[in-house]
Image (cartoon, rainbow, N blue to C red):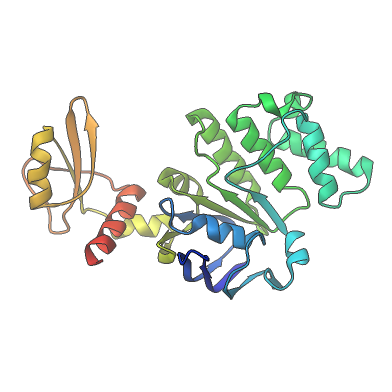
Length: 294
């Protein structure tokens, strides 16, 4: 269990990055969804003991992550958004280095651990290859391998699929799902809605340093069942629809614009057809509601 209580952080510039974040996260993959600048990376760095909060509490299985940083780090695996690697080292040498840093002193134990990790992330055949020649997906899988050293209880991954092609993204999704067990929390921070809908049993949406939603993806979709409608129109007619309906998203399609609207009172017009709602519909609708209030 990860418990966060009233976590606050304001930078010297005056930017209030976190405004009293509170969350309780059980074992499994948990998605933290929000746009760039919402406070996700600040929260991840604090959880990873790399940044000091102004106030608040963090505990994993009863261990104080703010007051007991060394004990916290023994329970922690971290894959940051910008994961630096020594390009001349091989995958095997890289994991040797991280294993030593994490206190695996015995050489035979370290060798067994590295063999198992490389097998788990499907990099055994690339163990002697310099990581400078790795693809983005291979680098991310190696990053997860180092995060797994020490059997952590909390694994933090910050924007892990940004820039990956569809095949590598799917492979990475499967890997994260395998990692999350009965005793491990995998905290996935992302701005990619499909990552959350594919992977996460629980989710929260953060905006301007505040949690604005906390639920399961299924519960989120249930809230907008039977209220999302779609039509395709010429580009010049989009502004007319915006003036008449609550447009949640628009997307160009074969020279025309596919428009999705929210209409809880039934079909908004003859040109509209009902569609199955997505988590992106929920996210965009929630953000637009708050923007209209502000």
